[in-house]
Length: 134
Image (cartoon, rainbow, N blue to C red):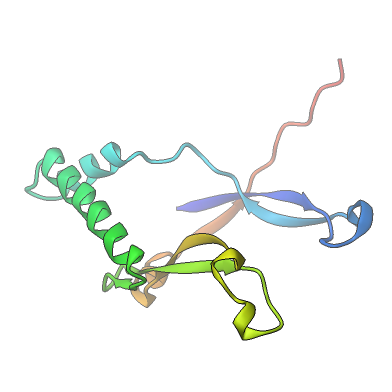
């Protein structure tokens, strides 16, 4: 398998007017895989029906948020772990840190060593057709 990439222009953060543009490699995204297709693929690899797999995935989602809302890390063995993470404003004094300094809640996913090992892919540059002048 190959991951297609393209050159993506980015400006310098914190520089008025953007500063010098630099180009970085970015993944060319294809259509996402929806949960029903994912469940059907797993079903084809096992004795479970698509409905059974879908039910397990839905139950997983239902239980995952419960534990994340309690601030827990959910470890899933060879898959990796999910954990809640806060984004907040920095304060000079510990006593000034309050609920008003919290800006958002994110969910982090950290893949396991096994999953990282299985992600051995090649990269292929995606060449876009040049725009035609009209």
